[in-house]
Amino acid sequence: MKLNKLAICVLSGLLLAGNIKAQEAEETEERPVWLPSLELSLDRTSRYMSEGNVGNPDPIDTLSLTAEWGITEEFSFHIGGVAIYDETNACDHDDNVEEWDWLAGVTFNLPGGIEVNIDYIYYNYPWDEHKHNVDTKEYEIDVTATEMNLKPGIVFVHDFENDVIKANVNVTYEQALEFISEKLGFECPVELWVGNHQYTGSTRHTAVYSVCVQPTLNYEINEHFSIGTYLQMGWGIDGSVRRDWREDENNSAFNICWGLNLTAKF
Image 1: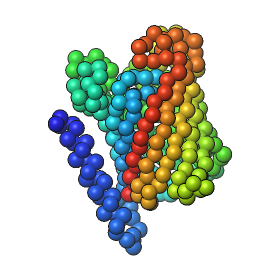
Image 2: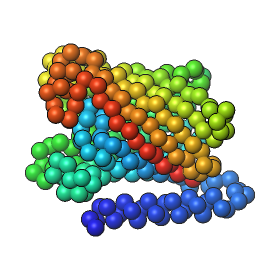
Image 3: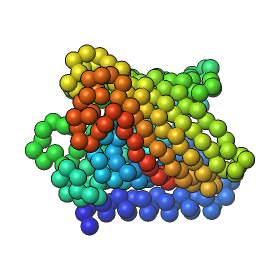
Image 4: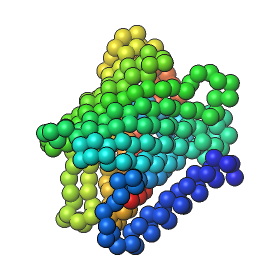
């Protein structure tokens, strides 16, 4: 078993075991300020899609961990990591972790239900043995009106190494499915992506790149665990983008994949 895969399995087991222990313990005291809240998420996805574009046509496993410290009610700090593992050896990734993502950021809760996230993210690709400079570093600003219907938001992303600028406007529809179960819920985020010519590849102008929809069913097992299933769907909007997607053997004008998710919070 590869070292990276072993590390992921061990980390998953330890965190899930800790979560079960936390669930069994009665919370008689408030959480100490120095102790972060943790969120562990494990996904199995039929292929790797990002903003509607298929980057890897084979199934992947994604493990993410985020730790957040609530400094005050209006301000918090968080760090996290994501490992994307390809078991099918697509793109000569040698049955190993094909991507590591590391992030650090802050969250501001402003009056009127406005939430602002500012993150610095480093994307690392271990399979790039010849160092073709595919690693990227970017910052992301995410503003969401959490108390409004559909929770409208906007995300701005700048990859300052490659001069890539992109953004999306988004809404999320949420509905409790109490007629089936009090623990079952439905949500469907919709994102409209726009980017400059560096982001949209051969397209030489800033373009509305794609629209992405992800209908999701979530079942809350208890206060610590939830499971979910979802579809990711993406449509190329700009004519040049649709042409480029059709010329790529992994893409078409409309791309879709399915996913399963397990999330633990403690």
